[in-house]
Length: 168
Image 1 (cartoon, rainbow, N blue to C red):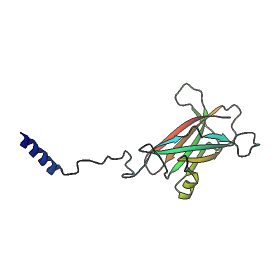
Image 2 (image 1 turned 90 degrees about the vertical axis):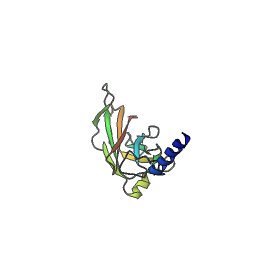
Image 3 (image 1 turned 120 degrees about the vertical axis):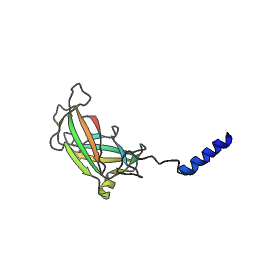
Image 4 (image 1 turned 180 degrees about the vertical axis):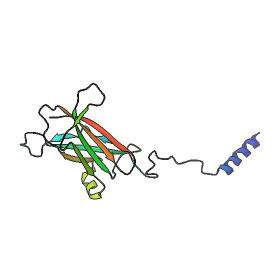
């Protein structure tokens, strides 16, 4: 009996070859054998409204920190476009509180395909991309806005994240 088991094990190894371990395929077929963007995340701790000049009567900039994460959930750099959309906060009883998109500078796109532009926005310390968006004056009654960030690159996927921000 032991000889039969040994014979079957040797026969299986010979016919199946030595390549028993198979390499897992990435879920993103555009980038086999490489790292690829799996997730985009807006950092709520660092994203904030700022003023370009201290004596301005309103906040005219939004400083945004965005992290791209690879398939191992590690921060990474990538080429592509970031689209930033600002929405009014709608108090409707729904999961999505996006109201109307803010007119004017409520839609901004930044292309990171150029390595120099990419490097200008990269923060080595935090592993985030940092953007300063100019915004128009919001109505006085504005208490919150919704920031939606979408990342687009050569893959067929659009990755996005949104954040509710209190307006000072």
